[in-house]
Length: 379
Figure 1 (cartoon, one colour):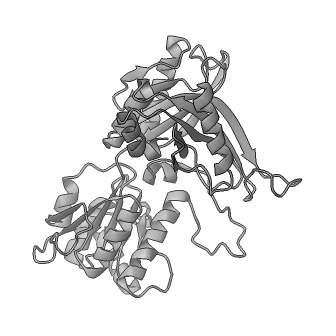
Figure 2 (spheres, helix red, strand yellow):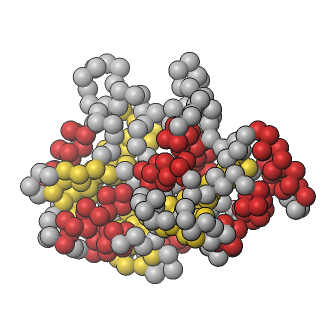
Figure 3 (cartoon, rainbow, N blue to C red):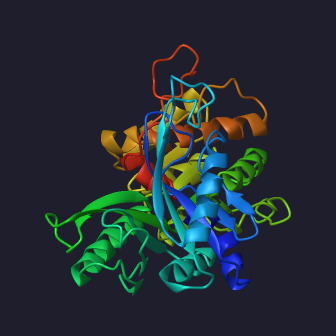
């Protein structure tokens, strides 16, 4: 639900009651991940999505029913071989959905929506399965562990939920957690949906060149907070990079030293000059970031590796370097090159192979793993 927090926060401010259907779990091939949501207000206005469109109508009706009854509910949607027109996922997967009515501006849900809309790190924990009296109950958890609301069980359940939420916030992930209604692992079982919303991951683009301008646009499209850094003030200007969130004039390695980056950050080195590349990559490859790529020919790459070995980098650190940067798309223009870089970043995020899906036997939708937790805001 936090993926549509800005819109829902406006609904709360306008005093609009609504019901929200949220993906709790997926099985097999499914187009949306846990946390994806569809909301419907009392006037029938809908925002968001829980699938590629194949079950939206049925979920819309569930939201209207939740508004009428004031009760939370759960539902599963899957593919039906018996009836080609049955409501279900024609892609063959199964979606587990939680539908909860929300009164405008009320309780933990509203405070969590407001925090997410402000861009703060926040988590919303809801009971997605368990005793009917607890279903849909919500807890708002901040990054420092403070909470608002209650899940309605024993106080220990709120403490367990808060601890799990803080851990998932640190990873930038959404997930389900099994617990007992008494807060233990052995009490009456409940399933908690923990939705984490964190500030957008960062993309640092070093080198104020035409290829960087195209990459900035793609980075913004993918949801990154994009910074362009170059030591040359004549090139590093806001006028040349209007889509960048920041344009910094500084030596790349010095600017990198000043930053606090989390494990979701991606670094794209387009400077193509040893006096910039080597001190920058010496530092970048020692950081626990998600992706480090550097532009250059294969000859430039080999020369760069030699220089990096000379300054003390080991083979494990050098193995992290994606160079020449990007996937082999035959790219030539800045826009095509930016697309190839973005494709490699997405593949690294989800553990994709980068091979064509036609004729391949690889999964279309990869399960979120450690790499996904590093780059993605919601997995």
